[in-house]
Image (tube, rainbow, N blue to C red; front, top):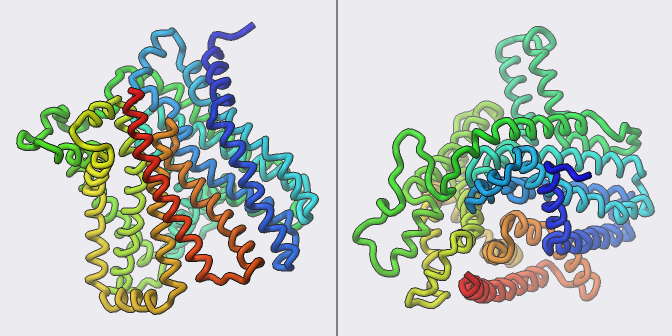
Amino acid sequence: MKLPALALFERSLRLETRSALMCWSRAGLLILILLVLVPIQSMAKAGWFGAPGLHFLQELVWLNLVLITLAGLSYFASAITEEKEELMLGLLRMTDLNPVAILLGKSTSRLVGALLLLLVQLPFVLLAVALGGVGLLQIAAAYGTLLAYLFLVCNLALLFSVVFRTTTTAAGFTFFVLMVFLIGHYWAASIEQYIASSSQINLHRGVWSIVAAMINFWRQATPSDRLSEIFKTGFTGPAIGFQVASNLALGILFFLVAWLVFDRCTREEKDAASPRQWLTRNPPRRSRIPPHLVGLRAISWKDFTFISGGRLGLCLKFGALVFVVALCNFMALQFGTGASITRAFEGALLIWISLVLTAVFLAVESARIFREEIRWKTLSSLVALPISVRELAYRKVAGALAGTLPLLAGFVLGVLLVPDAVGKFLNDIFSEPIAFGMVTVAILQYILFLHLTAFLSLVIKRGALPLAIAIQYFGGAFFMTFLAMILSAGGGTGPGGICIFTGTICVVSTVVLHRAIGLRLERAAAEE
């Protein structure tokens, strides 16, 4: 007898497990396991380290931990928001499905699919026992930790997917909460110890003992602390610890909260692209179009306004820059040497934070710049304009860059603060061919990453940015390690040859993806 509440769950589960994305994910996991296994086995035979099985398990588990976190930012965070963005949630409610049925069908089915991706690794992970240095208990405990963390991430992202209207917002809050959960206990412990020591309060009495115990429980609930314990030599258990129980309890709590707020947060179905009305009434899109804006400049203006956020988006990005710089200054003053902030420190801080934030925002917008047109079925209208698809894409990119590159003003200010240090750094880079090659390869890899993200956004429905990170910066890292070992063993190729070879691969791949994006845009416009 089938329960009506499980009808949507059963259908979604069948679609998820049989989809092409899941098939490619399984194949990618197999290739990734091989790329992890071969270098470790080779380095172990060369005598670089002992216990190759333990190193193999460690790298694979930590890689899975990062991939689960990335999955929470798109695959799980879009469970309900994708229905809101496509204005389909109201149709689901018209079928008389209750909130539990919708949550199970849209989120838990994805959780089961992700669990299967973890469990399918176990036959290959058992090779770690044959390699030596690890036992079955450690494998069971490590993958139990991953399963519990996956359950937590899925339901946390589900909660934000119910509360917010867009996947981007849900993913942003999911990322923030996960980062606080994973590394926030270090800051909390430092702040607690600093306040207690400065106030001359005994940590083992009164309120400070309770605070210290809560921070300790927080630390024990993180998967990183549990995995560090599992990977120690002589681990004797238990296979299921406090981390597993706490993560499962938090996941259940998040699911229940999502269930409770579901009706309230989905009562009114609004256009996900329209701004929220917080303090004032926001004007509609049409009223924000300048009357003098005509011609092809309107394409760049549209992406600057609605993809990058326009002037408000610039203000928010500058606010994020100021906040991060202020936070780093506060941390340096309170938990560093305690000395005053120097000019050199402030200049270096502005340079690096500006570069990092610009890179992050460019990556986010590369995943949205073409996907938004496909989602709202406007690509065919844009292609009908008297311009080529290439020029259309370039004008859209120009609009997105106009909303992100002003963040480099912090970089310019940092250079003005420490011109001598920047000049010395550039002189060292250009005087050392190896250093210059490494910097060039890093820039080429980032350009390739932006192209890969944009292309994946045209191919898959969700998760282009996390998938691009997984493909390039994890799969690519293992591939280049494997390739470097082969080149070094074959002809003694040095770091310079490896940089040239890697840079050539990046350039060729970027050109191929550049062309593929144009062809995919033409195909997507024809399919609308």
